[in-house]
Amino acid sequence: MAVIASAQTTVVDLTDGYSVILSSEVYTFQGTTTAAKAGSTTTQVIALQGSTQIPASVTLSEVVSPSGVTVTKDSNATAPTLTIAVSSSVTAPGNVDIPVHVGDDIVVHKIFSFGIAFTGTTGNSGKGISGTPAVTYQASASGTTAPTGTWSATIPAVSASQYLWTRTVTTYTDSSTTTAYSVGMMGAKGDAGNNGKGISGTPAVTFQVGTSGTTPPTGTWGTSVPSVPAGQYLWTKTVTSYTDSTSTTAYSVAYAGTNGSDGADAITLTVTSSNGFIFRNTGIETVLTAHVYKAGVEVTGTALTALGTVKWYQDGGSTSVGSGVTYTIDAGDVSGKASYTAQLETA
Image (cartoon, rainbow, N blue to C red; front, side):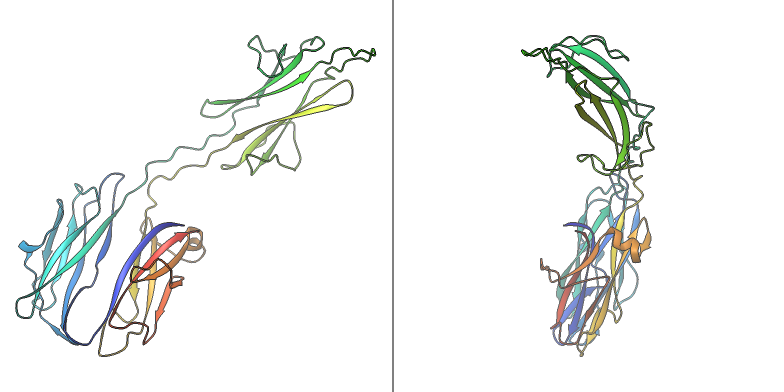
């Protein structure tokens, strides 16, 4: 399982005592390949005593934040809204410690966590087949080590007990090459005077596109090089026939790479609640919805299914309590407070 994106939210049922929450406790800033892009987000500080909202205050000089992160606030004396901004000097995720003053000299420390959605580097272009593979031949005394002499486009004479080597060189659009060999032995004359077997005609070289790089395809082989879609394989089959009507078959395979991402496809996830996050003197009943964004555009339906599955986790647990873009919380499911994390996961 791989986690592509995640977001956490907290739902609270307040009945007594002091409670302080942030309307948003986590945020992911967009980034370059190495650092955050300059940006900001907001979170509101809400304090309650039992079910009654009371004034909350934040002294900015007491806030502790990483270098490059600044915190400002509005003038609301009851529920101030904080603006948390990052500069391009921020290169790692971190936490902001926010002391909140409530009641009579009570200070509650709230932690706001932020991450950075780094963009990927520009991917390499996929490489394809350039022209027709070059097939050449050479005789050798070894059947295991490729000869080092001159290769010829025509089949040479092969002495009895020697070997005919066939070399297939495939060239790609990035000027790289792969080389495959097949080898056949010229039979010696047997004790009973039987004729040794030799090469009969020119080896037949054919081509076919396959989806596997390990198992030869079972479709129709052609004498010309076909177009190979990105992510598939070009198979080359060389069939050598002998004078005793037997034959040997050798394969070589080459991969047509896919185009890499241009880095503009960062995936983020946020969570909303149909009935808010604070419930006063009532059971918690709401529907949480996960919103997945790719390159800043929300992804839904089959496009989301292609990315992965949204799974829900409660209070830091490792076993999911539900899956899908929505999760319903019914009255009685939560006692007091619960945190829910939505994760977009691949299988």
